[in-house]
Length: 169
Image (cartoon, rainbow, N blue to C red):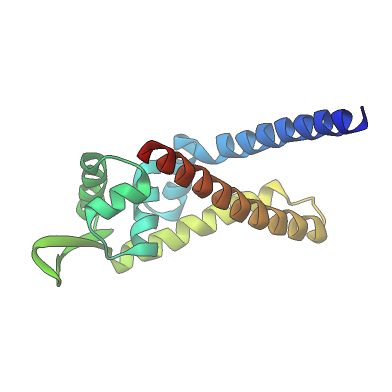
């Protein structure tokens, strides 16, 4: 009976964890919020464009197909987002040195600076959210989120690997 109670308590806590993560995701996934923060950083960008630019800054130069895979989007959507970033002067297409027929996308200096400015805006917004928290609590939350993010990513990758392995059977 004791183990059953522990299992129910753990299930309840996991439900609460899922609800808390969902709340954080809702707060950070708002397209309106992304646009406002990008605007404060100096450029009107959609959430998708900001995320695309951030991936290009972090992983570029890269092909649009690789970018689409990272974004979990189809190639045409990634291509449209890249085109908007190129028109805005935040990204550029350069020849792929390994394949003369292909192009790579890289961030311009302006795109890199904007990404840094947007990250600062997000940090400022988060700082406002925890302004009354003791520093020790902010440090604790940061460490726990880093651990949780790594563990969740590992569990999700493992689940995806198992699902792909099951499909091969």
